[in-house]
Amino acid sequence: MTKFRPCIDLHQGQVKQIVGGSLNDQGADTNFVSQHDAAHYANLYRQHNLTGGHVIALGPGNKEQALNALSQWPDGLQFGGGVNAENAAEFLAAGASHVIVTSYLFENGQFSWQRLEEIKQITGAERLILDLSCRRTASGWNIATDRWQTVTDTPVNAATLASLSEHCAEFLIHAADVEGLQGGIDEDLVTLLGEACTIPVTYAGGARSLEDLKLVDTLSGGKVDLTIGSALDIFGGKGVTLEDCINWNNQH
Picture (cartoon, rainbow, N blue to C red):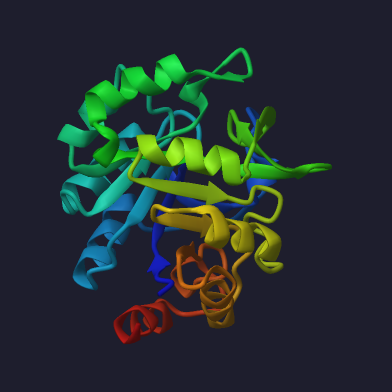
């Protein structure tokens, strides 16, 4: 069954909810800036045993906050954002259950199997999550790197998902075009993930209500989990409460 997965998005040293497609070197369009630090949210998720959540560092200046969050719940949160073969071990040692990697796997815009093997040697496939966040293109969806600004030639399709699933524990997939807009999920993408994925996968992007948990569950046959960000009450949203999501997980 589909589960709610929590998140902590860090931008410029603060917990924020942003419009994904707007993120660049100058900043981002922001839906919410929290008065609480990352450790606060890590503790909140730990108290309610909301497992499988991710801490994502969006650009520089977030390491201290990320490490504080991981220390609050050792092995309870995943970490992504600038992860590479040189620093992956540090974040695992700091308490991350898994590290999440995207941009490092691309060299000059091309997917690097060598880099995948290098980081896998450090993490093992069992503690590695591949972030295949993507943008919609004329042919479907393509992986987007560098804070979702660079659209690569690597498609998100059944063949890609099958080949990469042998090298990691999970997939994390943000639909960057709808991320932060609260305009509804990308139903076609969720359907594809449900049909093609043989390992755990979390989808994020556009979720706006508890009904979206039901929709993802239906479209994916219960195989895809859902992250809700900007619509969540703890991030200033009006669409769904954290309590609703906790109850959903407990009932399913």
